[in-house]
Length: 304
Image (cartoon, rainbow, N blue to C red):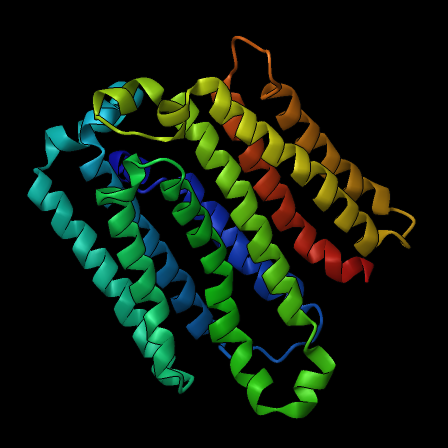
């Protein structure tokens, strides 16, 4: 059981569950928005997302086996117990189940075209694992896009149908779309930084696998400088944005300070000129920043 939990990146799955719950409870229900999906359907939407993510992680491990032998040797245990064909079949079943659930939900809300969202997600995950992971920057952008797509998919299934059909609801709650889009951009940006840092950490194994990730294509210092610039811009922009959103509240400084602290930690860890960088710690800072951003969602409803 433990070996499967590690293969499915249970911590990342848990963060995704918290994200979807924060959007549903901290935004929709907190503002009284009449969500399209009942609780049972929302639970199925979460399950579909987790299944597709787990399938993506498994496919990535299959195609990334040689690099992981150096970067993350603990994952080799999975291949000692199961054949590559068995693992690939599990990934296919998970992806198919996730798409099927997505199709059922699309039928339930009478939006058949929305089935394309889980299908596109699976196709992108497969292409990433097979082809794009070893190319400079494109793999990072694809994973960042998929992180934002999780938010967009919930927006499509749980929010848009009623907004597009009921003018009164649109007039009252139309601004909720921007909350979703802003957080999708947040998820994209933070994930992009984390993926570049992850490539910096995995240089040795990626070289062995013949990859040409950004640190290999450009060199470690160049890739680190890009990550540094991205986190620096993030610290200024999102810190300012948070201040604008909560600026009139007396305790808003707590939320603004959190953004700046995580951002400054990333800036300090990735600063140019530093010879030895703890990339694992920098990755954890980005994960903590994502978790902090999720906590800001219910805080948004409390302070507005």
